[in-house]
Amino acid sequence: MSRLDSFIRRVSAQRDVLDHVCGLIDGLPGPVLELGLGNGRTFDHLRERLSGHRIIAFDRALGAHKSSVPPEDDLVLGEIRETAARFTGIGAALVHADIETNYAEVDAETMRWLPPLAAGLLQPGGVVASGLPLRHSALQHLDPPADVPAGRYFLYRRTV
Image 1: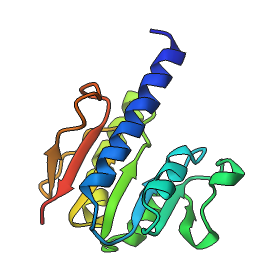
Image 2: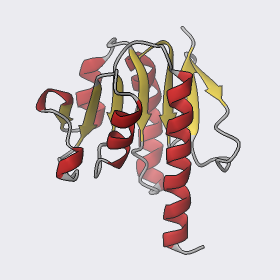
Image 3: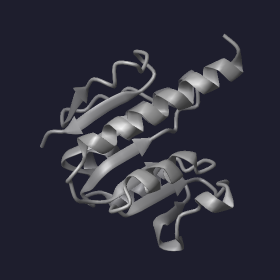
Image 4: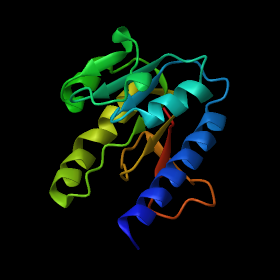
């Protein structure tokens, strides 16, 4: 498969997962946390779908298209592992973490710190959507939409 076809499949799956998750958190109060703003495409999509929620975006540096930059109070720059940890207990309805690199050693390290971070950011009943599998006792695995290939995206609900 070409890199272009792979990209198209990835972003199509991402859109389908985000739309699905918006339904899962319907009626759940609390902010939405975007871990990895990137160029701002998913932030923009979430902003459109979840207009009643505050969306806080985190990234190492600002690289988003100017139309997809959050307000200054909702943009947190620096190492995500450290900056997002300051929001532990915020009671997020959704944590979206699209921060995988496809470098095994980097992603293995992320899979060590991301699960407890995500669990600490979510309220009970909140959902995390991640490009990496997460293992944590407070996170219950959810099936992604049927049209999303297995292993492409991972969904979890905070249970306690």
